[in-house]
Length: 458
Image (cartoon, rainbow, N blue to C red; front, side):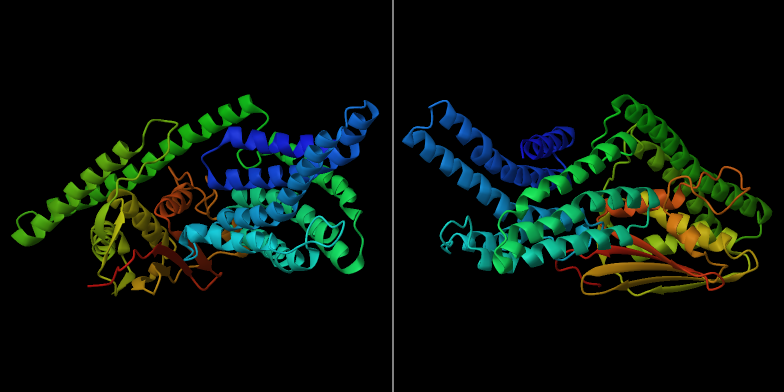
């Protein structure tokens, strides 16, 4: 059990040192510390107390202190492990930011069964009141495993899905085994010593974590630090360049198209139409400036500058000013039923809508219908951008959010970063982005934003 103690506490300490501000890191480190406390309890009972006895140091006060320390460590493991595991899986889920359960009281509410457990007196020689504790630890652990699996299945980015699979592989088998050895077997079968076999399963978990840390990184923990820095820098520089290229390419194309339009209609267009075309060009140049301003250096993240904005107007602007010159034989349908406001970054969201609409139009080279819907539900504001193009197969759909993946082979200046960038921007707005597509049946992109309290359409 000394191996379990050292292994788990070392992993927990490394995770906290690596990324102490991230909520998921703190919770998974808590799992390591609470699980390691069970190992410490066993070490005190099996190794420390016998050693003190052999040395003649185990006086009555010392024995009392050690027994109390053993009990406390045991309780931290029995009560803390299911609780910290469930809390980790909740905050680790990719849709956690949009869940209505994301309240400050949730951790406290889940803590109630833990606190109530202290009101029950355990039977003689039992460390905990098994029958009551098993009633809440079983659903906690099973729910946590189910959430981990669901999070892996729902993750659309294949790179992130690989990390979620490794996290599930590291955590789920160990907690499932612990459910039986710590709670079910003692409660219903009177088998109290099976917890000692946890060391073998924990050994497997530590192996997975160690392998993941060297190969892919585990919850932000990367053993090969130098390789990680070089890889991160290269990806960040390339990503920043590609994002700017994508934004500038669209807006420069728009400026060119409307400039040609003004030139060809010189002397014919009415003043109002000419003013609208000039405004399109001015907005495009302003958008280029905003995008460049928001890319904070080559290796830094894109930063949001939030303001109150109307999504219906932003979508109208994207369709009329950006998509109109490219629509051709594509029929544009607007169904903008929400007229309220949200807080968001105008430039970034404009880029998201432009990107998705551009993809939709390019998917219909022979013509079709582009439908843009804006609706509200009780909790969300939803933007749906739908095309009647060729659609995607399951293999393409799984990789559609991967950086640098593109289905548009042969096109110049296409780095495949568009949807990956859009996904990131929407997540920064605490929203979600999903794609529904079938070959021959078109593609629908759904972008959901959480409604602010009291927010209603006007």
